[in-house]
Length: 400
Ligand code: NDP
Image 1: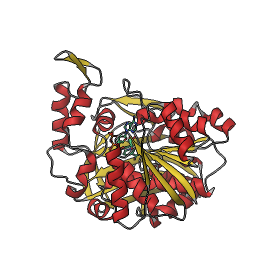
Image 2: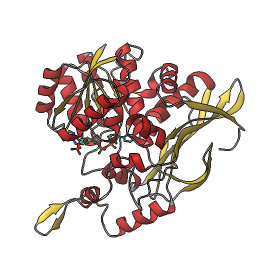
Image 3: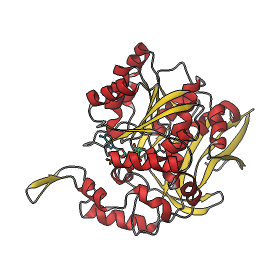
Image 4: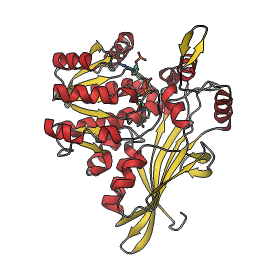
């Protein structure tokens, strides 16, 4: 029985709040705080209407450490789940240190002016979390998050050595809009327009954005064009997987999405620096976010499924082995369960599970840590139980 404070009432925050409310024997008290109170109230009312009891709601500016500390001192949670934006990771971690509260997030810190996607500043807080006797679980979404757990499960149970990992992320959903993003548009477009990067034999290799294309056959979905991108879980997996020779990340994009994105880039709408407009300063990407559909509004319109997983090769008992571990998630089923589409659902469920394992003491004894540093089996069991079942396919070795 624990009190949890969730920060961020967006697409992912909604799922986290719903899923925590479904597991009252662990999350007996739930407080949802965000910048816009009305969004918290809407989620509170939805949860009540689904018969999962009451949650408390608050307003907070998570860019402000003092405000966060005051809120935490009032609420006195055991654990904070940060599903605001990556910009707030460091202020929220500081506030957790000041208030003696365990921390969990789903995305690494980013500075608004600089899309770097790295764990460096969060890992640097390890000794301070250790001194405070607090834990911080980084990247407990799907990717990062479940993809790390799939790799850890493979390392702990299926392989003696892992040599190659391809993380493959397919959203085969259709929301009917000409162009929309499935999570925060600003964060999503920063990620997609960044240079591609992958790790091979100890070196990071860079590619121009979305120039390396693979026709990948996603189990139960089919062949979809997939593009090499940088994705943050590779940073910790490259450190933590034994014997690794290469790790890459691919995501599917339709030709329609890429055409829109190219036009937006060409006219400067994806810029993250300030420009002068009619006497005021605006950041084009932030303005674009205002124009695009709110990801939270895609839920009732989205049909189809996601397939996210890891294709892993290596050695077991002296023989080559190749396995594909993946989850399939259906957008319409997510909507029926928690008023959300599958991209927010696949992020919010692992955030709840990470929090649950920390509160139960199943994952403990580390300070600032990434998902693959712990035993994967309890997380895998919880995934199946709480809405994200997975499959392991044995594949023909030798196709890397
Ligand atoms: P949304 O934009 O839908 O929601 C973000 C929420 O945070 C909004 O409610 C917003 O408030 C709130 N917020 C923003 N700034 C502040 C602030 N300063 N103080 C308090 N609240 C604030 O984003 P998503 O729900 O789509 O994404 C949430 C997080 O999940 C992001 O960090 C994203 O990168 C991560 N993510 C991780 C994935 C994974 O698999 N690991 C996949 C998808 C997302 P307001 O309502 O006022 O705008």
